[in-house]
Length: 445
Image (cartoon, rainbow, N blue to C red; front, side, top):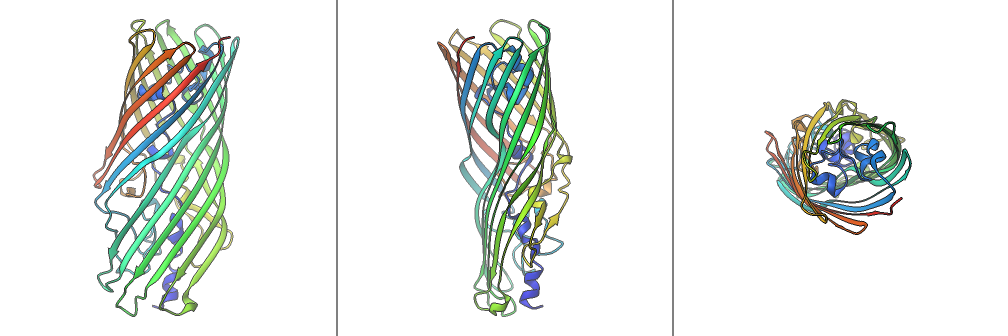
């Protein structure tokens, strides 16, 4: 087979020119050091301005005006026995199953050698929320990161047929920022309703490089592959919440998020270069493109119980319907298709995922409050064979968080430290260390 015909078969290589995403990554753990300190069991609590995320009905509990500024940071360790995946170009190449780029030659190694990565501050996200009460109505607003993924990987392998060294690297970043406007309504002294609109802005940046060098087999010449892709887009999501005070010490709550369709428009450049071959076989392509991305709908139920004036317990169940998810690298349409840039439309085969959360908050004194929480995700929402070390997070996650608050006059500082871990039968292990800090300021009526 001629070199050019092999290059033409590599069109799906660009399907991975966007970061890999996982259920726990593309859907964030949540916002607010206080809420996260309770394991994210906050749907029936929702009594600060982060209610714009957890349950907008909770805004109606608030008085006066207030703002909240915060920062969340997560460092990640990952281990995968198979390293970074690569399949043959053509029908075997499946980015939704963890492939990063295609192999031009069948004899190339199926995986590269680096099996462990450490990404300090892989996710660092600021947040801002606020509220303004006007009698029965409370307006809420916020800007925060709703999800994302990050990858920075380099690895090597050897082609046993040609002796060539295969080096690959991928840097990718995906961010989903939420600009929220909400309103909470106190219908009665027991019933509260909330409505919100999320403007979701998504951004993709990816750099993929691959070198196949040192081949001793003339029919398998050296080559270099370079890919650069950017895209940005926005969409709207609706949010509806309800909070009901069953008893002065017992709340129940529910929230529904509609999900959003986002068209990520951008540009991709790709080149395939054969240093020792016929220059007619080289490829250099560029095209505008768009990714069809759909953020999935979700809903949650919560219970909060305050057995004493100092102690509060909370429990949440959350479901994300990943069957409605459009995976960005799997739904790409190029304006100018070529040998490398080919439109793809693949169904990732994801499924719904449930998570269970529980939290405790105890007021030690008028100034100090301690809290702790546990989060368990029963499934990642995706096929286990899709695991890959170049993805920031995975499914089947467990989270343990603890934190404190200190109140001084009209200021409250919330602080969190936590850990996150998960493992699958596909030899994927994932560990995280998280920190968060928030500062809340109330302004009275």
